[in-house]
Length: 113
Image (tube, rainbow, N blue to C red; front, side, top):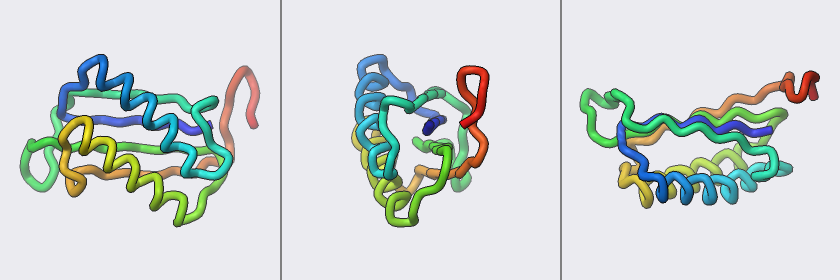
């Protein structure tokens, strides 16, 4: 039940959005037991964002999961997210934050897992 919420001050063209969706669907598999089957995505382009005192291209990517993952898994996913946002949106990797949250309660379809 992963959820990836990405905010950026860059525009995301429809074809780029589809590529991000596809590639994040693959990247989430860096986390054991996670797949695109349960992945929910939210993109917020064209946000007013400043990082390190400038409004140069930047992104904040939040990854919420049900359960836990290892540091090694998180490192692999961060690497993929930064690579992807750099290649598709031309955001330098040192201007991308990736935040992880592990959850023990996750609701869906009128109940909780």
